[in-house]
Length: 161
View (cartoon, helix red, strand yellow):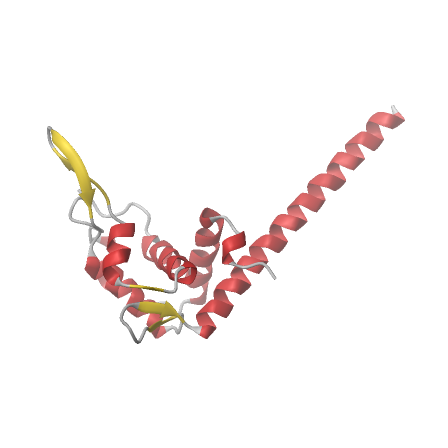
């Protein structure tokens, strides 16, 4: 059975974020439309669904590793801190945003607190993520089968001419 590791990160995150949005279970804070995601940012994200995308990325990251803390997630989602005419350095993302994402995922049962600190994926969360990954792999297989059938039809038409 295919898992999260077998699917590209971009496809999985977009599919899981749309699943989270459709389910309507994820509690989205009221401040998501005005908050910056890091001190090095100048503006809030343009995408109105950025909270779902971040939640999907965090769930995938914690799935791939055994357990992860808020500090590691802040480093992961950080970026380039532009410092004027001085050289740029790495800036960490907002730990508060990471914490709120993890708390929202805990509330719907995807994550749970680890005994030795940090968060880890729960059994229900792992099953949920594997189900999404399997659906992506099956959709890719169907697309490949359709393309192969179209190519065979094109070849058959050329042979008839």
